Length: 477
Image (tube, rainbow, N blue to C red; front, top):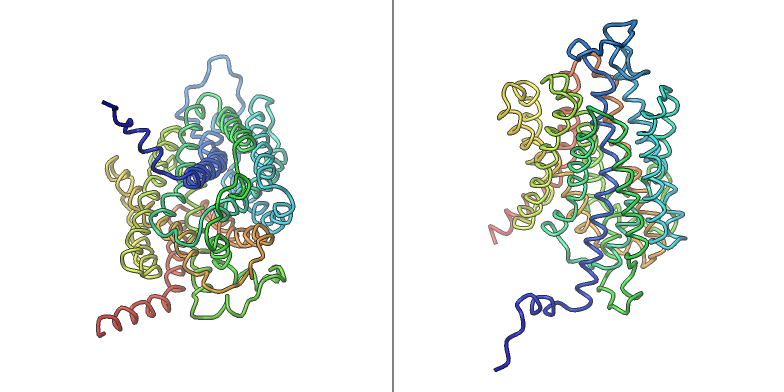
């Protein structure tokens, strides 16, 4: 009697060759962008180690010191304006990232994406590691660290346009909230891994908090070079129907802001894309402020926890990962709910409305106990990052109903880069404002975040009203 085929083999053979390649590419792009975010996170963990409360640190007996208050700090961050200096470092990266996005796609569309991503990750790894080597080389120049941040910001612009282009080549229009919510969790997964890895070394040798993530992203660059398949046609697979749609939808997301900056390539036709009923303007401005809030937490949450709850750098870094864990759940739940209801704008609106008071509550009572801190971080992370994830994935897929690119696939990388650069304006503005406002008190930082959250809600109001009208019409029918 012939034995049946092993269950595992039956599972493997149940998927077509095209499906295996498609989801292998999805996995690789997830891994690549996880590495990009992993290498961005260490700076937020190390901040609380560069400037500490030296009165709580045991001083070596043989150490000759001249200042009892700052002897354990790392110059030049030992001064009273250390928060402003941290803000300078954040914005050296973020402004360079935003500016670089507007030119990144020009190279991306002219170079093979596999080469472009590989070189980008290798160079990002180099500059991330160079920041950490400042510890071992005993460098105390703000200019050195600022230059490294600028160069790293420019190198990181290679990631998003190329990753989105690869996914767009392999996947058609039908991917929606749940699947793309899971894929988009690469941001939060990278933040969590970056925090945990940096936290291992931050209290003993903070330079390794940068060197190890630098080696990891460089390794993924090598992996990309050997295994990434850019297009189905390269391996004789069938291209998905309407495979351009996904990228076009990502592009529509912030196209209105790009138009205002007069940086949009001439290959695009704006009349249909910017037609008011599509909601491009509202979702673009909502995302701008949602990113402002999200990136402020990305770069400043560990320092806030360290200052308010008096945790050491590693504990604060580990605790901050709960915010990103909540973001993963929030993004997936937002996708599921919006899939079920068909109300993308309403889902985002409700989560943003709930986020505003929760931010106030977290700042007021979030540090009273460990259980309260954990619960509030998870809740705030889900409410803040849920709309951000939904807009950058499922909403963008829904918006691309017009032939805005006219099938011009060569322009995809350039336009995607321009749009992500525009969104990065909010990402750069949030940490900058936090650096300027935090010396006046953390309460004022949270008031700024709550205000940004309210503005994000207001920009969605027309779309929420329109969705409600649609539901009422169906109910009457």
